[in-house]
Length: 424
Image (tube, rainbow, N blue to C red; front, side, top):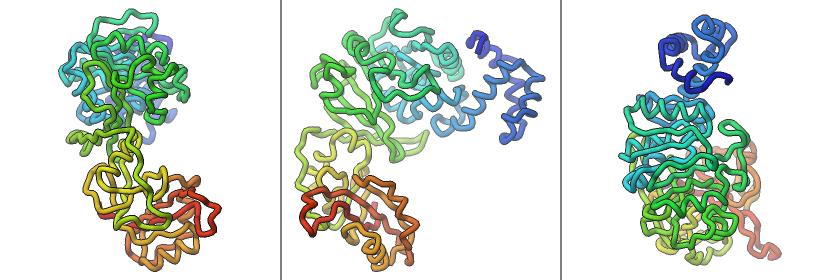
C-alpha cells in the first residue's frame, strides 16, 4: 500500500468509501472478489481504495463471531484474527481499567483498546503498523470512546505516561498475516525488553501464548518475559470461552488479585456472559491414579482446558476426591462432580484398546452416535471412526487414553478406552 494508510482510511470513511460500501452491500457476496465485481468498484474509486474496501469487507463477514454485530468496527482479516473476542477482552479490561491510565503496547486495530476504554480507562495505544493504528483511531471514534493512538514501535518510540500497562507481544513475522513465531525470543517486544517495562508500571497485564510453557521456571527464568521477578510478584490466569482455551494472562503490581494460579471460564454468549474462576495450588501433588482398567468411581470427568493449562487439575481432583485414570492423564474418575470446570460422563465400560474389543463393547452398550476423544493417544481418534459401527441408538463418548505404567507386564495395555454416557 503506497499511500498513507491514515489518509486512505479517511477517504474510505468519507463519500468515496460510503459509495464503495453501498456497492459491496448490494452485490452478491459470492462475487465480491471476482474480476467483474472489482471492475465495477473501480469505476467508483481507485485501485488502492477498492483493495482496502475489499479487505475490510472480508473481515466484516466474520466480525460477528468476535464482536457484537451492532458495533461499527473495522478490521482487516489479519487484524481481526489477532483480536481477542469481546467477552475475553472485556473480562481482562474490567480488571485492568480501574488501575489508572492504561497503555496498550501493540494495540493492533483497537479490539482490546476499545474494551479498555469502554470499561472506563483513559487509554493510549502504541502501534507500529500505520494501517492498524489508523483503524484503532477510527474504531475508538466509531464507538464514541476517548483515547489516543500513537504510530510507533517500541523500542524506538518514547512511551507516553501511564500507570497500567497491557502488552500483547506481536507473534508474527512482518506483522499481521505473517508466519507465526513459536520462539518467544522472536516476539516483539522480545522477552528481554518486556521485564524492564513491567518493573516500571504500577499495574500490568502481559498476554502470553497459552500453548507456551507456563511454569515459573519458563516465565521468570533468565530467558522468560518475567526475568528477575519472584513468584509472588506475578500471577497466572488462563481463560476459556465456549470450551476453548483463549489466552494466558500474567498479572503483576496492583493488578494482582491474590491467586497465584487461576482458571477462568466465561460462560454465555457474545453479549451476555458470566466469569467463573477457580484458584488453587499449582504445586499440589497428584492424587494416586486408579489401577489400570479400574473405573475408580461411577463417573469420568474431563477438566476444562483453562484448568489444565493453569496447572490446577491436581488441586481440583484432590478437592473433589477424584483420581486420574492414568498417571499424567487429565481424565478424572470418581463420584459425580457438578462443576462447570469439568464435563462428566457415566462410565459404561473400561477396556484395553483394540478394534475388536471396542466394537464388541459398543454393541453391548447399544451405542449409536459416537464422539471420539483422546488424551495421550498419538493419533487422531477420527481414524478409527470408519472402522467402528454404532448399531444402536444410545449416544456414547469414546475416551482413549494412554497408560504407560509397566508395559512389560503381560496383562497391561498401553492404551485404554473408557466408554461414557454424558451426564453434564
